[in-house]
Amino acid sequence: MENLAPGGLVETDLSGLTDSRLFNHDLSPTKIKERTWGTYNIASLWIGMSVCITTYMLASGLIAGGMNWWQALITIALGNVIVLVPMVLNAHAGTKYGIPFPVLARSAFGTLGSNVPAILRAIVACGWFGIQTWIGGQALNSLISILIPQWSVWSLGSAASFLIFWAMNVYFIINGMESIRWLEALGAPFLLVVGIALLVWAYVKGGGFGPILSQPSKFQTMGEFWRFFIPSLTGMVGYWATLSLNIPDFSRFAKSQKAQMVGQAIGLPPTMALYSFIGVAVTSATVVIFGEAIWDPVVLLSKFQNPIIVIISMLALLIATLTTNIAANVVSPANDFSNIYPKKITFIRGGMMTAVLGIVIMPWKLLSDYSAYIFGWLVGYSGFLGPIAGILICDYFLVKKRKLTVIDLYRRGGEYEYKNGFNLKAIFALAAGIVVALIGLLVPSLRFLYDYAWFVGFGVSFLVYHIIMKNK
Image (cartoon, rainbow, N blue to C red; front, top):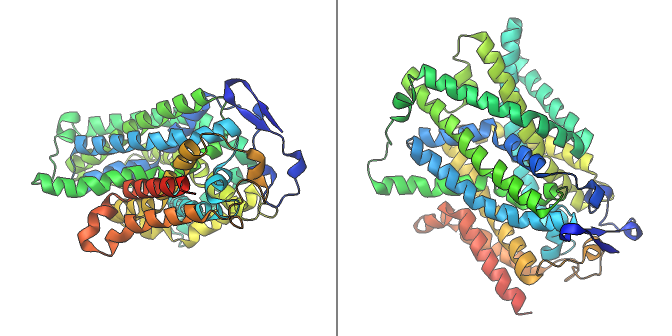
């Protein structure tokens, strides 16, 4: 039974479906009383996720690749404005019906077919979890080495730091969504203050913004610039392409559509632009101060002589990494894995699966250099996630007209059964988008398709799905 609440929010009673194999408590629709996240909470979520080491490395990687400060900043800002659109659109269903991403995916892909996009999204999240945990572990190792000098000579110190930071992440996994909201709300203001402090350091040590931001672009022609800019922009969109899919996992707790839209608009683009500028300015300062662009903040901090500065900075990096990792890289895959077998895989078990797989993926290889990070990791997986976003948005807004039968999302044989639980049209549209987006890796003359992987995949899958669903 469905109840319509103020603001167009829908609450669905599924008490009669508790025995369904597609149902568990973690995947069930949130009740109106559980939708307590206001604009500040949503904005804090994005501030906490945006202010992190990987955002810093994103910006500094563009500088290391040859851009000057304003080229890098415009690339990042444009990418975040673009990705905000699918973010807000996909969040709508989560807020209206209180459902998470894998359940929303059942509408387009089928009750069982939803596992296909869910697993693709989960695998990417596991990679990100590993990246963030690896970075956090290295920062913690540096911090402990300063506080306890004997730690630096212990052969297992780095591994032990990694495991300690991994355990910190597991703590919040076990304590669930409310602990995540508390962590984000507490950490967001502090992280902005620390970010500004880093900017002041760059200004003072670099002799003002003049010398720092006067570093010229390394590109000699516009052709060289565009060849770097296009895949870089795709990488910027790809950076949040993961969250643009599973944003319903968070927006299902929002008080209203206004809260999720305004919260995201306030929290994402401005924070990414600010912290990216910090990354750009600090990395540019390293060219002036050290004679080379140091894009990894952990490496940069190791060059500092003042232990107090290093301790404070490392603590800031640890908090930033922890808040981002839990919110961005645990919530979604935990729900995605739970969607495979809801009766056996709970949120906590799904989160633990993520924690283990994040190590198996060997994140240190993804961070070997800025090109592997931006053009390999970010652009590559965007070719898989762009098509999923295209199908979900087309299905919800054009095919279903924002009207879902929530009860049928949790049972077999209903509206979203399609053919034995799979909507083969959605699978075909997904495959079409992925193939076209990634074919440039195999055919050099079509490399431009890969450079635009997210955009190409999104557009192809959106159009193919719309056409074949209209012709039933």
